[in-house]
Amino acid sequence: MSGKRPTEIRSVPYRSPADAPFGVEVMSFARMRAMGPPSRRRAPQRPQFHVLGVVDRGVGHHTVDCERHPLGPGSVLWLRPGQVHQFDGVEKVQGTLVLFQPDFLAPGTLAQAAAEDTFGPTLWRQPAASRPLAALALEHLCREYAEGESDPFPTRIELLRQLLGALVLRLLSGVAAGAGGGGAADDDTFRRGVHRPAHGPGGPRTAPASVAHHLTTFLTHLRTR
Image (cartoon, rainbow, N blue to C red):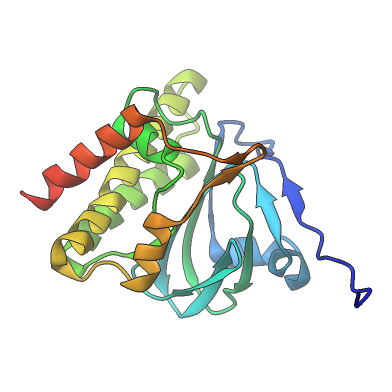
């Protein structure tokens, strides 16, 4: 035995900002980097919430479940609750991160079905044709999050929920385009993300049949448009 201690994996619960207790938080990669020392984000951690990221500029990499994924303009990353990850190569990456609780998206929607799909892709690249509408959806979410103070609290939460759902579907359309031969995905990285085994506290988990069915129907519809 080498005597080397195994790396500790820190569990990270969701904590709403005091001024935005919505169950969703929007921030830039730059703000995330400023929240603590580099050693903290580079260490393995297991968030108990979703992390959806869109890269605008810069290149780098990101490690998920011990596998390194390249990041560049147009990259989309999606960490699901319980995955182990490290932001170990994002010093030059610019873009937006959306953190949200597992039950934030509206139930019974395609966006929620995608969030519950434990076999969903970890990272893909949006094709150029898909980026303008995805950028508009992201901008709308960011502005509502930052500037919607005048709305009643229930209204604001519902707006953020619906806007996040729209963003999720817009970003997933890039997966559909790549799988249909449009070059959207990072090839092997995308295939590994789609087919990666998913594990929970009790061992391997299987995506519910209804979730897989609805998501497959949605992606098939996009591919054949």
